[in-house]
Length: 121
Length: 329
Image (cartoon, rainbow over all chains, first blue to last red; front, side, top):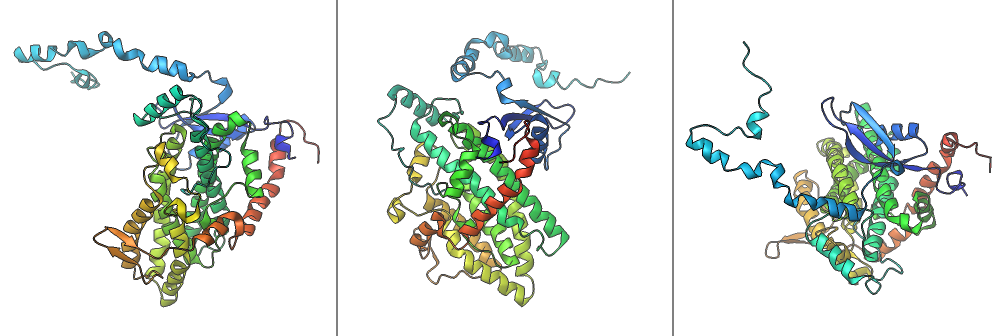
């Protein structure tokens, strides 16, 4: 019997690895790995997932510390958006025609998010 | 990388466990949904995935172990760095795939340790190509170009696989395989455009690897070896094409390139049938294939020994990492 399983399966833990590609990006789940502790998990994360990609930050989280959804919850929550049109711009689609009648362009998402820069005074 | 799935003992589709759940599962698969590790899945699906992915994962590692032996022998510093990067990628692929297999095996209380033990005991098979010997630097090129090329054909065929964790691992793996393919092409190209001696060395390697390349995709039908489970993988949308379709795709893509380098294939019967739109070729010896994957190949014992040595030689690292002081056995 080897030292890894002398105390059952507790030698290795499953860690989930998250990383950030740039300062403005969000953390993204990469994959999971097996490691005996946090420090090794961090090293393995770099070895396994960041050999080429640009990365500015890494999280390793023990999987059993994550409260995820179970299959039933996933089923329930992924279907809940069927009746939420009143929270979106979908219901206001007729405005485009109205504005066109008044010879104006629609201020849609694409237009509004392009307002990062305004004319300098 | 591995397409040939051996018959799974004792996992004959039991009288379908729960017909309503099964129907719902199949509907999800038909709709292109992804199945996750904690979702309900039929036993046959789980067993097929475990067999396929543990074999795929362990084959990555069994391929990387002999490949690392090329690092000191590679002719230039750049080639050493290239092959070293490739070896590290293959080990990384092994790590990803074993994780996927482990989560599938968890309900049975089985872990990575069990997979390693199964490998050494011969219960877990690894890919036919990694049982073969390598002789010259041209082998390193042919392996990178054609063996990895064959692997790319079979892995890209599963990029839409119904099992989410496997499908996600494959996106990453296939992206890295592009580098491996070009690494192999660069070695082959240099030899193909080199001295007569280098050209002869390359031709000799292609001749030697040809039967293994044909075998790579597994037998065309169950009758050949009596144990192909390819239909199960397509039924569950794990992969899209049959062994023979994948072999034909490989021949379509690679043979014109082989010929363009002035290389020949050691098969006088090889020809493209315009009417059937497929390659006619001489079947490799499928009995030999069976022997090879039963660990009776030319280098099976040595490769398993390499794995054992890697495990033994790194024991001190695991000991050093253990939280509890470990008493010498």
